[in-house]
Amino acid sequence: MSKKFTGVGVSAGRVIGRVRRMPEPILAPADGAPLPAGVSAEEETARLTEASKAVATGLKERAALATGDAQAVLKATALMASDRSLLKSATKLVTGGTCAESAIWEAADAVATQLTALGGYMAERAGDVLDVRARIVAELRGVPAPGIPDSDEPFILAAVDLAPADTATLDPAKVLALVTSDGGPQSHTAIIARSLGLPAIVAAPETTELADGDLVFVDGIDGQVVTDPSEAEEHLATTYANREVLPDFSGTGELSDGYRVPLLSNVGSGEDAQAAAAAGAEGVGLLRTEFCFLGKDKEPTHEEQVAAYGAVFAAFAGKKVVVRTLDAGADKPLPFLTDSSEPNPALGVRGYRTDLTSPGVLERQLKAIAQATSEHEADVWVMAPMISTPAEAQDFAEMAKAAGLATAGTMIEVPSAAVLAGQILQRCDFVSIGTNDLTQYTMAADRQLGTLAELNDPWQPAVLHMVAATTAGAQSAGGKPVGVCGEAAADPALAVVLVGLGVNTLSMNKRALAPVSAVLRTVDLANAQRLAKLALDAPSAELARSVVRAELSELDRFGL
Image (cartoon, rainbow, N blue to C red; front, side):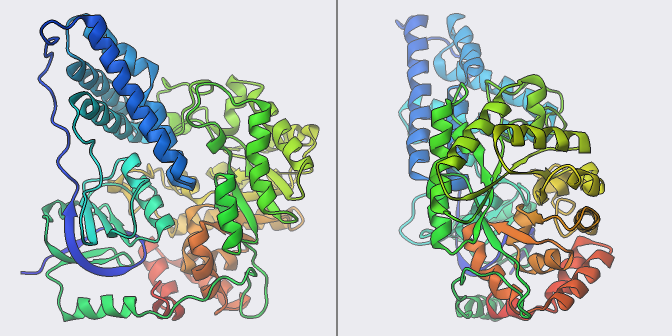
């Protein structure tokens, strides 16, 4: 008998295929298992150290072949594999007579338990620790590390959730769709799925029932998984497969009445920037400078930073590139900059705030950005993350101008910044809305938790009101520019609403440029404003989404 499971659709698509489940995890060694006979603690410590290095090296090698979000995830996981405090704890256990496998297992378990207790972003890091633990134990045992199953035929991957290193190396030629029982709309799984264009559903708890070989229909648009699909599901999948091919993005984002909405791209490296430029992006709306810092245990040199930023600027000569200064902290800890012992990192020292505890890093970064700007022809704008007050905005703008950067702005990620956007924009040149963080802070819902996925939805009317407050503030400050660089900009229907709310530019992953452009070209500004009003007046995210989507026929035409 057919069964239907409901979750959160995070990447559009409708497909039918056979399920392959993630393989069984690495089994735990016996608690406190002793050193092997005839092996000294020194020898066992050396074996543990080498295994850790091998895992870190392997992840770094995979990172070198990846790009964008995938590269950043792999670098962060590699950094975790060589974490000094983790290895120190494990080494102490080995010295006490415990074998390497048991030692790293116990040490990682203690770290993960502490992170889980902290909640929020740090609870998400617990999964990274356990993933690294399994990889080190597999290396010690000489067995394959956990990962995506091999298959001669394309399949639908089902899992409780995916480790960051697994998500980052998904092969869209083999994986038809993703279904996870855990995770949330902004989890690693969701973000990578969207960047790869894979249909995906997260936070579908009952899908743990799915078994290898089950034939299922996955609807990443409506968030449904159906076993033993009927003719109705087969029709939907066939219709999606035969959907009209999206026209390539022309390089000019605009509405049907000619109203211009520049479509930019989010990038994390020079390679990303080249790919975005090839896809027609009109510029860069978000350069994540973390790519230059992740995987390092000390601050990159001035020369390293200049070269890294310059590689991005070179791809967009004569076009706008918006650089976000280092967004370290919370889920992006850096050993030389952030404090891992914070009780609530999501509300702690992150982004711009790190200048309070580690003064000098931001100033040096701005100088490197300024030099790279002077060596290239891109129109470089710079913005700070996690700005909460007008005074902070003014301080950052003054720092940027002192470094020689002409255009300085801030991210709008917390409600206080949205409410005071007018005052903030009296002190800087532009703002860009990070919808991922703005959603979680507005709804007080950790964006990584599947149980809170319904709240953590950028269609939430409260979040849309925060966007409206920001654009109203911009008008009161003389009509200064407002962009959106969060994941919301990549949703074609929500992009229409954002434009209707007064957002001037949209920035997204390069795959979203064509679908967003195609849908925007079907509405004029008055209609976009009307749809935005409908979304604002809706009592829930579900109703806001449905009432807008019902009026955009192009979504069905293109399978969006």
